Image (cartoon, rainbow, N blue to C red; front, side, top):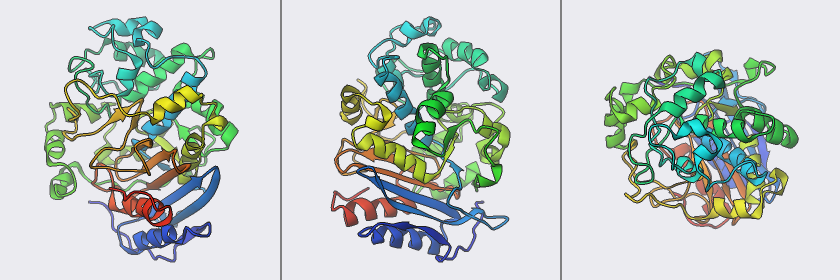
Length: 410
């Protein structure tokens, strides 16, 4: 069971600009609620940092406080970081969303995958959410060993007809595409570090490098898998039950690498932090994620995004022919170019031009072009909601409904 720690609302650092006091009030209320151990929230608007708050403990066992530079694993919030890095690569002309994956990676065409486009892959429509047999940590640490495993996989459904959440695998496919088209042969983690994180001075990593002080990394406080059955009021029952079937698609989707057990806290292991898992183990600060998305929300000039690519990111999702019910999560959702888009159950941002990705446990990062906002919330006490964790939702409501007067968030 997740550790419960009493956090004083006075254990809050940072500041907000004038007019954003309601965000500070919501963050302080989260700390006082007993539902946080440690967390941070940041907002950039029109290129300026307007919210930068942190509080609680980066380690609930030792009571080490969360600091201004504390970083934490963000699980699937990493997908949005990877998708935005991929958009930078597309803007540089390295690849095209509408090309076939096999145009860049001929070996990918095996097992009936020759016609899958990059766009379909990034929209979780390729049917490659599970790998059989699943690779081990040593395999994913070496792209030359991982690439043939990815290329051999047969789709779980006819590509383009359905979508199903590629919870872990998507980032590896994206990384291999970048590695094959980048003149320097970089993985997505190296591409992010060189082309984005360094120039923008972002504390943001996919594959934690050796020089980073490990004492800066927050300890994740994880619940056990069976506990999800006690939270069917907030976690979709169809997904929770499907995930408990070890041979079912939902369970196999998350069972990679085969020797990494997230339910046992393995994402706290340094060996797991150090490899590149571009869909699930990005580590950074809320400040870095918000700044990255904020750059995209204000036109993308700092990132080198072209107008055409930015228009694609803001455009409505292209739905699979068989409807928008996800075959892995058993919920209706919209995906586009590696991001989630707003949909009826989860309205985020001021309009449907927004794009981003929530992460397992409650984290969320996204861009809202209509208001020029980049938003990010990260934490180390993992919750049970697939999206719109009440802690994050309260902060998002404070920003968009209460401060900006935009549509209510859901």
